[in-house]
Image (cartoon, rainbow, N blue to C red):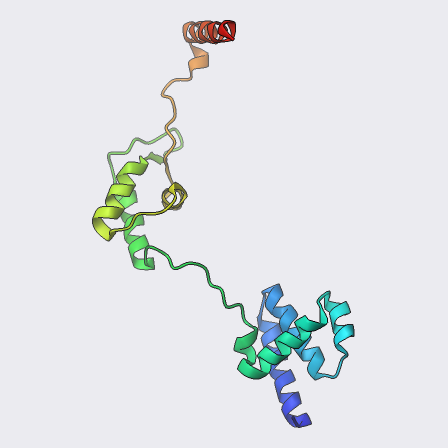
Length: 172
């Protein structure tokens, strides 16, 4: 590799380092850049708190694939809903008028209604209820039902509950 090629690659790395915010990718790019500038792998490892094999591995990958080889390759699992479908679901959630509004003006929904809608419209069943909760939260809809009246404000209800608790404790 000529010194002119090396300078060109270092310049390319510098531009990418300036525009990138991911610390893992930056560490890779810096390791490669310093190796191209002639630094010892041991010194690079000490400075970046990485192993010498880390430097060697990413330098090799850079020569094979360029900047693309330094980028993170894992992008997460594929979404069950496309961006457009998700927008449609958000619209459907927001237009449901029959949901009760709580004191904050947020609608209350049940998970089963959302599940049915997703199965009927998109043939989608999430593996975890968390995904449904996430959709409801994004639409600013609460799935938690609040009591209509605070039971602590009703002395009779409080006495009744205390009796229940005492009887349960007495059985233990």
